Length: 157
Image (cartoon, rainbow, N blue to C red; front, side, top):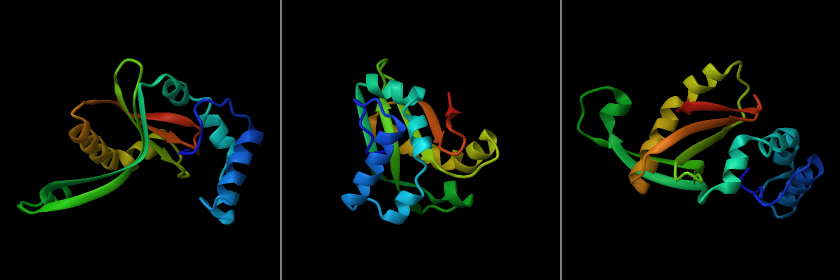
């Protein structure tokens, strides 16, 4: 998803060519390429996230973050220590209306949107907190793009 070019109108052949190119450049292995669902990637390029990204004022992909949080938030116990949390935000952007949007890609085999949200809500709340602290701007929406479900799932409105 990171290597998709916003100025292209993709078809299935072009997505497969992109995957082959990533193998040739040794960005992904042949085994990884065999597990990539080109149709699911193509479907993403038809999503409202993709369309909104084309109009975005700023786009950041694959951004690492580091932050400290109180240990009691993780363990639920009254301790004073802090924990260093690190992660990688798949995508965030400032849309044409100036709103900060956080997107996480998931490839899990899930039975429902509810299962997906329940599984990742805490992780995405940490990402939201890190992003808001770094940019001094409130996150307007958190979306998961599920390649398995083939759609956007809203975590935060």
